[in-house]
Length: 288
Image 1 (spheres, helix red, strand yellow):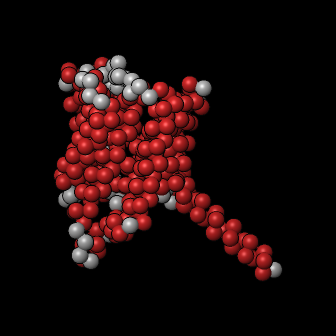
Image 2 (cartoon, rainbow, N blue to C red):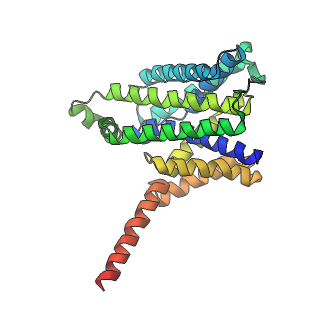
Image 3 (cartoon, one colour):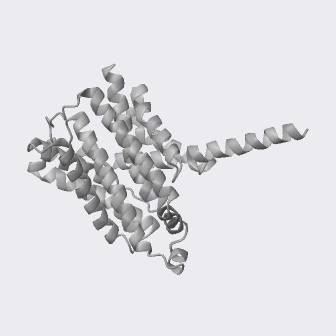
């Protein structure tokens, strides 16, 4: 039972992380290849604070705020770059983060931070907390998608130049996307650190950023339900098939290739196509 609870907790944390990236990449069309750096900022901040006897929820909030602050800084630095250059810029953020935490002894250096305090909620209580955050983040994403901001994000994602011609402040909305997405990434990091209770630099290596991106793309850019399903699937696959752990990049790369080649809309697009085809099929049957 303990293993299943731990797996579900990890799955929920992964969903929060992928939904946070979906706000930036899926909703606003800003490719981020270093998103796990903000997960790491949240994890390290919350861990350092709780080891200094700061209440868990205060530490969690501080991790979100710091991750969001750095997200805005990266967003400001990235306003003049797009597409491939934006991807390279955000990828560099991941390597800068790793370089900093490896060199700082007060952050544990290469050995990381161990003996992170238990939040005191118990395994089931912590799982309930994580699932509660999953629901809140999903509802927030849904609210944004259905609001005027969601329409603006769609416009920015579709064509930034046209959005500017329509009078939209593209830079302003890009920063909002980065702030929200990175703050929620910090939330997932703080939860992750207090779930495993031990973090080190390799916990936030570049491959983990690719994992989050794979969850978004395979689920379907901008699709909330699709990203949740893809996150759940990619979270449990390495646990069910232990040998996958050694070939994670190969597996995710292959899945990305298959999805982009045969179903660019991801799982959400595939489900939508199947629904429309079945609808047409039954309509033809009724007319015969």
